[in-house]
Amino acid sequence: MIAFIKKEVQHILRDYRTMIILFGMPLIQVLIFGFAITNEIKNANLVVIDHAKDYQSVRLIQKMTSSGYFKLSGYASTVDESEQLFKSGKAKQILVIENDFAEGLRQNSARIQIISDATDPNVAEQLKNYTIGIISSFTAEQRDLPSPALKVNVSSQMYFNPELKGVFLFVPGTMAVILMLVSAMMTSISIAREKETGTMEVLLVSPLKPWQIIVGKVTPYVVLSFINALTILALGFWVFGLPIQGSFILLLAEILLYIIMSLSLGIFISTISSTQQIAMMLSMFALMLPTILLSGFVFPIENMPSFLQGLSCIMPSRWFIIIVRDIMLRGNGLTHIWMETMILCLMILFFLGLSIKNFKVRLQ
Image (cartoon, rainbow, N blue to C red; front, side, top):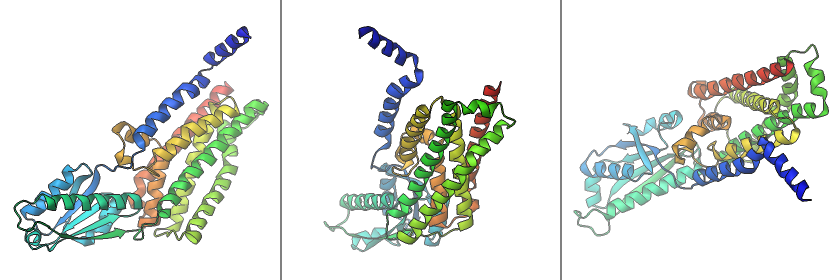
């Protein structure tokens, strides 16, 4: 029995894939969970519309930016610019300071308006609460004013999701996760199954070229995943009332692009996996958790450390969620999402290129 145990230990130690799963994955997951899961928001883009331009408004802006919750992205002149600022990503919140702010503080009639981008309702509500807390702290520190109980009239307005429905956030994120997992996992298992059953060798010696094998494997899953995406959209629209403010044709084109991206990634995983089990493990651990944690679906990316923000840039789901929210909630067109679209296209070319190269190596 001791000899058998030694043999099993040696077998495990020789299998580097098993070692990575046993020791590498838990380490990576603990680090990602530890840094990514946080409810605190930091460095949110703040745009200020300062109609007062007095010393008290300047002090309030300084207190807002020094809190760590906000970073000053710029100034605007009118509220009419709000929607464009949100669509361009220059602002997560806009602070409007009305005229005669300093005098209003003296008379307990100072007015401030908070305008938020509610495409992510949790972030919008939390930023509003931060702002109200900072304003309350600011008024409490005013020792040079006669009134012991200062009051600032604060009003708020939410763009794109005025009712702060959480489903407006979760439907696009759920679509990204489901399409990534289903598409990538199914395609990765498909070729691994060919290897295990021995039919892969038949394909490799057939007149089919590597790219033809890949296209043949991908095409059925493209259709099935697209039907899956249409089902999610239908449920979001008819059941939860999720609007589609932008072009429906553009939305479908972007969904198809993301499906092809997911399938190309799954094909690549399958070409480096010798068994279905390894392909499934890689798909689950390398795609599921990073897709959920590093895509901005659940936790804002700007809250994460710099190295995790950089790591999130290689996650296709991050760019797809931005695209879907921009089209469905903000009504943006291709001019606003061309960079995210180009990134997905480059990822498709990259992973398909690697997959074809791996096939060519096997043919040689």
